[in-house]
Structures are given as structure tokens and as C-alpha cells.
Image (cartoon, rainbow, N blue to C red; front, side, top):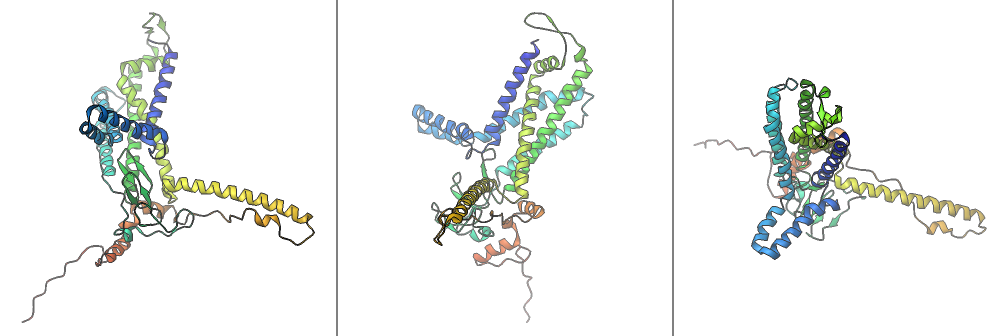
Length: 396
């Protein structure tokens, strides 16, 4: 056995690596994070360029198709690899353990199906796309004058409706643009934000549940085998080592390396995904997108600086005016102007209505559907469905 200090170093290294990998490959948005973009986008592109130069265009094109799916493949590798460890190593331990009930095998299978199902739904749901034809379907927000104003998209040449944004990943305008998520291979917008939240919620619950279950299994082995009172020996020197929690943890990491790795991974991801889910639930309850959250931060910074400059100029101008004898124009009038009150989020309708707007997007409601149908010259019944007219016999 190694000394406890060696275990400390290993745990710190593993924790740092899993935290970094979780952030770069799972949490961070490649569009906004330079580090994530380097490993998720730049590295695959350079590999494809090298392959094209070495092996030709045809091989590079095939590799490029896989490169576009790098994040999703990494997700599948981590999740399916983790579940393989659970099914192969943890399930047999459940049958022998008295600390985790046998019905958790069935619960685990259900959690696995929900995990892959939520990923499948999120990966195949469209955020919606704004063009000249679909604009009436998504044009239901007013311009707030702070973040949005009536402008024309220089790329597509269409009017930029409020809360929409041109998405470089798809080359289209996305309504209520939130961010682009490489792990589901989709841009998140008005119509699929609910499925993205479901994806986060399911995976957060999966990691918390998996962390608890594997911890109970390993703790059960410590108690059943009385490992805290066992005698351990240093494999290098042969010296006897006094048992403590770190020594026992090191022993378990050697004996159950696969399960301990999954335990550490899910423990770190529980924290990361919990924070990420909490952030999205917070902004959803305020009716703010990820894109708008960072824009509002910039607006608040701008307003604070403008207000401070105005107050300083006003104080200086009042001091000079008191010393002035004439009625000429004060220098303060030529200084910074009053920025006025801080702009407010006009889209905030209260927590309940904001969350309901995520669950049932405005473009999926009858009003938007009727507006869209009217723009196409069709008539939609009040219930949103076409009703067949009953055939009546002609009178003779």
C-alpha cells in the first residue's frame, strides 16, 4: 500500500482533471469559451487539415464528419462507459450487499433509459428558425430599446425580431436565442429550451443518484469487512501501515478502481451540473436567455460608468458655477449626459408565467399558430385543428 500522502496527491490530480474535463467538454459553450473552443473546435479542425494533407481529401471529409460530432461522441463515450462500469461491476455488488436494496437494479435501468432518452430528444429537437415565411410565427416580443431594436440582419437580409440572433453554427436566425450546445449538437432557442432543461435535470439527478448508490456500496464493503480495523502493508517497503480513512480509501481505489473512478466523476459532475442547472432555472424564472444574461451584465456596467461620470461632471460643474459671476453656459452642460434610470427587462412576467413560457413556448400556442396560418392565407379553427365538415345529403 502507498502512504496516505500519495493518495492525497492522486485525489487532487483526479479531481482537477475531472473538473477541467467537465468544464471544457460538458459545461462550457465553445462559442464563448476560448479553452473549450480550442479543444472542441480548433483541435479537430487541425487534425482534419493534417489528415487531408497526408491522406487526401476523401479521408479528411470522412474524418471531418466525425469531427463535427466530437462533442457528442465524447458525451456518449463518458456516459456509456460509466454505465458499462455500473452494469458490469456495481450490479453484481448490489446482489451481495445488504446496504443497497436489490430494487435499485430496476431503478438504475429506468435512470439509464431516461438519460439516453432525454439526450435523444434534446439532440433531435429544433430551436425554430426565423425567415421571411416563419417570421409571423415567432414575432411576438416587443423591442425593449436596450438590447433589441428594429434592425436588418446583414447576413440574411431579414428583419431581426426581438430576442433572435444569427447562429453561425446553423447559418440561420434562431428565435429567443440562448446558446449553442455541442453536447446535444443543437443550438438552444425558443422551441427546444425546455428539452435542454430536461436534459440537464435528468443528468443531474442521474449523477446524484449514482454517487449515492456507489458510495453506499463501497461503504458497505468497509463495514462488512471491518476495513478500518484491518492490517495493511506498504507494497514497496513491506512495513505495516496503520489503518485510517485515507488508507482504506486508497485500498478501495485499488480494489475497485473502475467504480471509484465513476464515483469521482459523478461526484464532480453532480456539483457542476447542479450549478449549471441552477443558473438556467434562475434565468428562466427571470425570462432571460444566456445570451441576454451577459448582455444585461454589459448594460449594467455601462450604466454604472455613465452614471458615475455624470455625477462627477455635475459636481464639478456646480462647484464652478458657484464661483462664476456671469450667466454664461456652464461647462457641465457640455459634459456627460444623464443616462437616466437603469433599463428594465420588459419580458419578465413573473416567475410562474416565465417558466410556463419555457414549458409551452409562445410559438406553440394557438395565437401564434393562427397568426402564422393567416400569413399563409389559411384559416385555423380555435382549437388549432382542422375540422371536417359533415357531409349532408342533397335534397331532391
